[in-house]
Length: 397
Image (cartoon, rainbow, N blue to C red; front, top):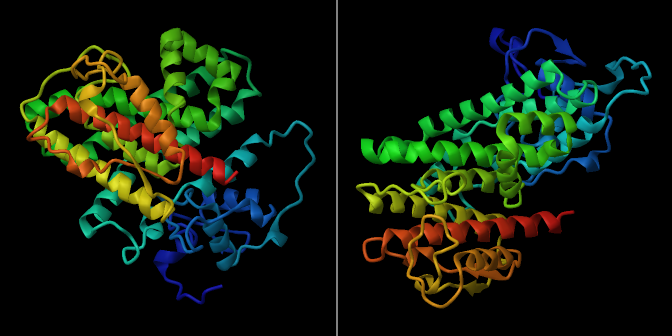
């Protein structure tokens, strides 16, 4: 245990994550969250946890759930011991699903500020700052907590129970609140003209909230819970559930890629998920595209850094030969060639090969090409990212 000087401040702070704390649990001053985390995981096989970056993640209150390995190591470092556990009473009805879910979720999440070392990263200083800001601007912690609660309480309540319905409603409300905070924290959106901002916010609220809900629903497999499924059907109808299920098939388990995808689609003037036939022109399409391109470049560099030298083959598309009928919001000429849906499918499968690289999007010039091409490029790029994420997930199983 580190021999740190005790002050009034750190006596009232959790030694693990820095959250407010008043009592010592298992040998160290800790908050209730870290206390329960240690109690759940301290006796598990340490192979259950794996740090993705050198075992040196910084554990703070707002990111403590990102790396279970480093969090548990810090618990032991500051004096927590299992010999202070009280023997639990046997309970044959005790549910263990959450104990299995949490380590898997935590071990896959990455600590941005510690994982991407500036001296080894392909990103510039400005891109490093942008990546960190995009990651931190969407706070999913409350959604994760409520997702766990929905799983935890499901088997103990009757379907359509009033308390469970309120929990589902709280989950939906929390998703909208997280979306609102995320959009308010995006500096690029705030700097747009009033007209552009009003158009984007209307569509971004739908896109981001749907994608965020799909991410949590997919991770905790909430649609397999009868009570949750019935309540959501009553609230949103079969169409709403079908939309979430469709979105889930493209949901990446890599939380960094997921948040970068949120940023790309937040800057879309078209609501791909809700209103496929509605698109409103803004007064400054070039500015918006440059922001999207900036996000796309950061995403691509992150993939190169994260997965090193595994990409050496390029795949490219002749955008103008792609039929637009199946691509929401894109008015490309209807020439003979690939449909937009086929192009996205190709990008998705190409991304699953570590030897494949997508075309260099920096060659695209929005001042020369039409803005609708930028929309399609963004959509293809996103499907390529999803394919790469799937390949990584499959490789570590």
